[in-house]
Image (cartoon, rainbow, N blue to C red; front, side, top):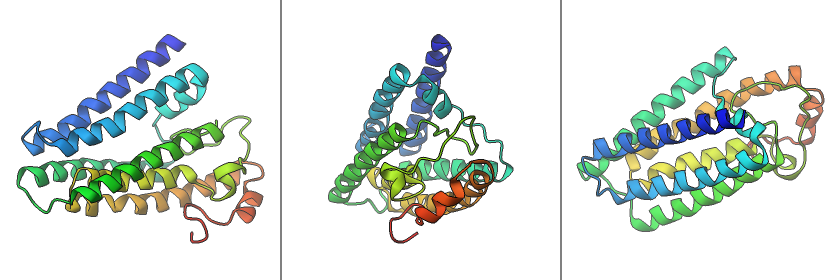
Length: 223
């Protein structure tokens, strides 16, 4: 089983790496796009480390994270919108570099990089706290409500982490126009959460009480 999981993980990792490289550097028309290499490093080095840790310590969770096939019809639409957003956003960032459109200053790129790394740390902490965290919306066998740690502050800390990460990506790439495209991501997350909470409330014992206890979804004291 571990051999199959390793093969699946490595295949998805390198496929993702190749796709992102092509989406960034082909539109950029050059491998000298430093911001592109910066993003590649910030994104894929921690991803590899996290994958190795999960493979060794929690292969079941790794398997869940590698499964991206949604069963909920509403979620399929959200995933499709997100996919188009990423595709267009990366291409626009590459074109931004090639044609020297409005490039974001270096200090903003540095700040975005720090936010991205901090978000990755938060992402890792969420995985540590919640071993039921698959990439798809579902209620698993023997799943329990997690209400401690970050889950004691907001109901969906993973989405908070990914929103910060994904909004940082176009800024790391130095593209204001790509950033405008990536602003679509928080909107897709709002749609995803609305459907996800209905699924959890209907299928996960104690989730309705948890919602009353932890009132905010992704932004503490706001929403």
